[in-house]
Amino acid sequence: MLHRLNEVGLADIVEKLDACQRLSFDDGVRLFECPDLLALGWLANREREKRHDGRTYYNFNIRLEATNVCVASCLFCSFARLRPGDPGSYTMSLEQAWDKLRERAHQPLTEIHVVNGLHPDLPFDYYLDMLRGFKRIRPGIHLKCFTAVEIAFFADLYKMSDEQVLRELQAAGLDSLPGGGAEIFAERVRRKICHDKCGADRYLAIHRTAHALGMRTNVTMLYGHIETHEERVDHMLRARALQDETGGLQAFIPLAFHPDNNQMRKLPAPSATETLRVHAVSRLMLDNIPHVKAFWIATGVDVAQLSLWFGVDDLDGTVQEEKIYHMAGARTPEAMTTTAIRRLIRAAGRDPVERDTLYNVVIGPESPDDAPVLVQ
Ligand code: V47
Image 1 (cartoon, rainbow, N blue to C red):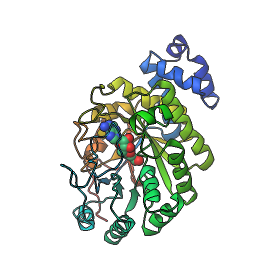
Image 2 (cartoon, rainbow, N blue to C red):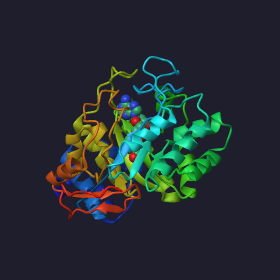
Image 3 (cartoon, rainbow, N blue to C red):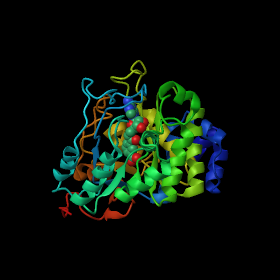
Image 4 (tube, helix red, strand yellow):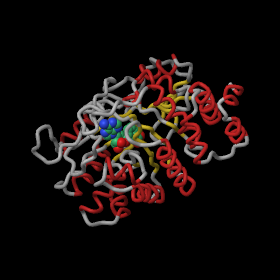
């Protein structure tokens, strides 16, 4: 492969990586323009294997979207319904939200991932009580809830600082923040696709504060719409700079734009090759973020499997009941069993590792893929 990387003019980048030197903005743009996808994948895979060998992580989680009422008007979103009472809008009662966890009492879940619309009328206690209830039902469960965009919204609505909001949620049981809401950090893109929600600086500041309070977080990147290669690289470098400061980011998650049922439906969905390229470049640019995750719901199961040779070491989890992508046209299943995830990792020639949210090993690669698992 080295001669192919030479041929496409990337020998200097290979040298930098060999010397454990950081790649620059221009390097990132050149990687996006590299015509040889396999050579790029090979290079990203080398970085992946330096960190994780063949280990490929997933977790046993559920997704909960407690309301789709949302005051923001992101053009790419097919999930939000603007006002309570609009056709298709819903808001779960706390009992309904808690039932989603009670119904899974038989499953060895380790995480609930909660993402909501920005609801203008719910009291802060709704969210605090939701978290307390989850911990009452299942004290050991990890609560990865509320994007930085939701945290900013709570702070403005309830007239608190971002830090106060995080502290109160943490006291009620919040363990970490998911990476949603990052989209593309560049102001040009945000103005066009999500002008009325929290900007990039505040998003990153909220993650910085969460890290200072001892929480881990993820960062996402929505790609395949109107963003340029330069804007993708800029996005990655802003995440990398935050990580230099705090070390609190666990995973970088590129999210493929889905065009159905939203105001950007005229755009085509990103291709499989583009998806592989974005994940590979992410691995190469983000030298300080431990994990690059392919969210299989967004990439498709087959491409997620291939991505394990293009820099990816994490596939998210069982998910179960995902709405945001399925309302935007995703044709992936809504859930995968842990056996199915382990088999697809194994079939790719990689080693499946079930992890908890903080990447502690729950079931190692040596376990058989259909091993019975203990219910917590
Ligand atoms: O922020 C919304 C994206 C995100 C569309 O932290 C869309 O572990 C594509 O952040 N096409 C929410 N994307 C999901 C998310 C996430 C997913 C998996 C793991 C983690 C994690 C976080 O979904 C939103 C937005 O960027 N989104 N609509 C759409 N039409």
